[in-house]
Image 1 (spheres, rainbow, N blue to C red):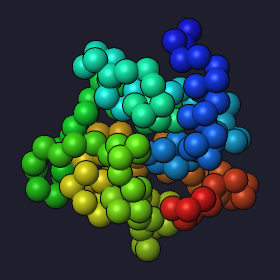
Image 2 (image 1 turned 60 degrees about the horizontal axis):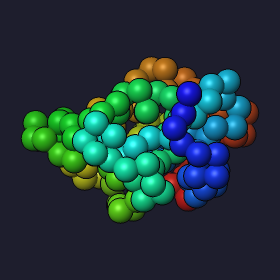
Image 3 (image 1 turned 180 degrees about the vertical axis):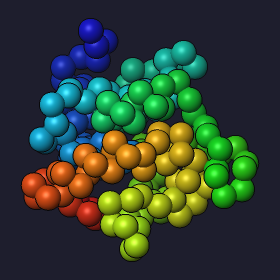
Image 4 (image 1 turned 120 degrees about the vertical axis):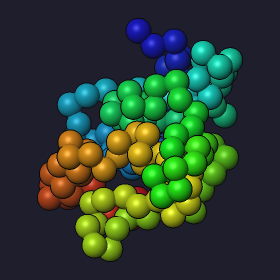
Amino acid sequence: MSDIPDDLRELVTRRAGNRCEYCHVPAEGQISWFPIDHIRPKSANGATESSNLAFACPRCNASKWAFVDGVDPSTGEIASLYDPRSQVWDEHFQWSAKNPLELEGKTAIGRATISRLKINDTGPLMIRRLLHELGIFKLSSSG
């Protein structure tokens, strides 16, 4: 059971355009409910308020769990995870020109987030491919 009030959940969902704020997969066409992610985890005293909440697909939410950082696979260094409330998605991510269903990190934050959240694993790639074929998933940062 969620501790997020319905009106706050609706605000977070609408603000996100009804898609995961990390991998941008839409909630439309999914059989699973999308949770609300505490960007700063509750276990680290993250508040249940709009400025600390993100709409997340079940896979990104489960992979992020209570983490706030990850390893940048390009440098091996620790980097903060992407924060949808204080950072701009386009500054950290782009769709690959080689494989347009694959997300690329433009920064250490983007790369660490993709790695930690397993955004380009086989499962998410298959979901994006299917949703794209159905015309539900658009391969652009703006929607």
